[in-house]
Length: 93
Image 1 (cartoon, rainbow, N blue to C red):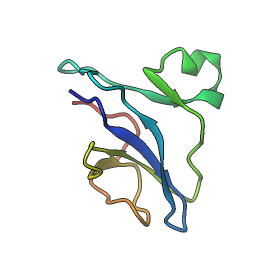
Image 2: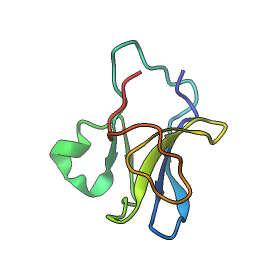
Image 3: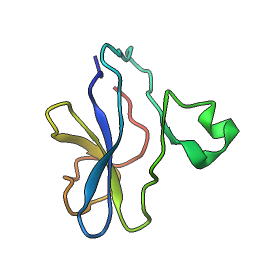
Image 4: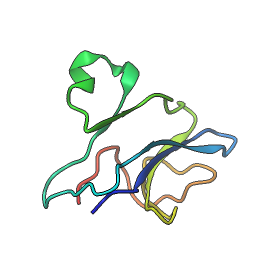
């Protein structure tokens, strides 16, 4: 179950906010993906998304997937306010 996981973004000042939350009850089968896509990414990209988000990720910030208890489980770059524990923007379970 991945329901309650959040996509969080931060900027270089360390401000962190939730961009999207995986709906309760969502499961991720083995060897599958859950893809967050910015809603402004264009129709071909948005069509691939499991979920979209509206507020983008700044160039000087970072992105992380956080567990429902707010611990970061993956992040795309080391930034203030989020712990670095992995690389990439698309995660496998």
